[in-house]
Length: 144
Image (cartoon, rainbow, N blue to C red; front, side, top):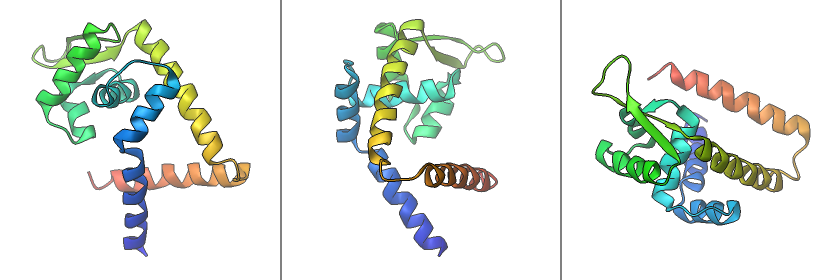
């Protein structure tokens, strides 16, 4: 059973991580952003404030690749970076006000997509799924 659960998780992650889905999300949200930059932007929005290293670890990408994408986001005015108060060698990133506006557009698009995808689910089924996903996350965190 555990192996089947793991396979189902891999199936789910592979759908979420498909670049063509990111491109569709970008187009549907009406924003102008490269798919690779989009993923870093979403990661910063989820973890903010976050360090380049933590973001790279979460995404499974190398530090320099994530750092380059952050530079693009900063140039576009979507992200601001600053040295960590605990260690000035660590670069921290968070969304700017404009970045938060873009994040809201993405969130509304994602919410609409999820609503369409779960249209045939009852409210109880959606609630159960959310509860089980949170429980699974907490269970798997113990093994970090």
